[in-house]
Image 1 (cartoon, rainbow over the protein chains, first blue to last red):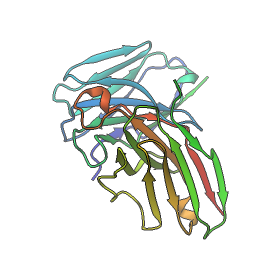
Image 2: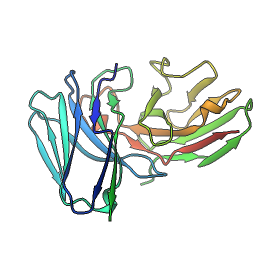
Image 3: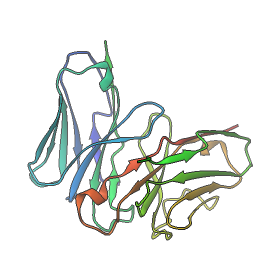
Image 4: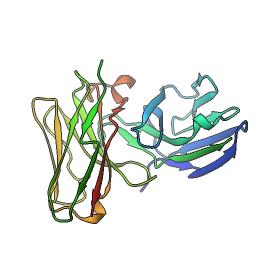
Length: 113
Length: 119
């Protein structure tokens, strides 16, 4: 059973387009994190959201945590080739067997110039 | 300060040989995690440590895999009698006290990974 479903799995767009990726679950999480991983590197934390309905912005990236704290979205405005990478969401669950964080399988984004 | 470091960065080994992968977490981080990632795929959880103990080892793929952590710092992941299906990138991450409910305690910081190729 996949606790966190990410969609789409793959996304290929042109520079300048907008996009949204989704992270959904039937479980409630105490926090939700987004990571970006570039080829040959480890994932890097982008943001943590903790309150239902919370919206955080990081330059052209907008992150939202669902009101019920079961889902999240990442919206990128005017995508650039530097946004290319694997975007992973991760849900925080206190006392979980995997050490409090459950990862989704990721959305692989390719932004073409 | 220094981030999470892993060594070696690349390892090529012959099928049947044993390998040891090393992880140095961020100083002061008491939780340490091991993940496996196949090419272009998501993260497969292997094991995590709270201090020197691993509460749950069920994520390890087989009994050929083992991990230990000593002194609450460095961890090694050992794969015995390697198989071709073990080829992957092995990622290590660390975080603050895992029993703390503050959101910052859930944030994991990753190393660059070890790319293992079994020929």
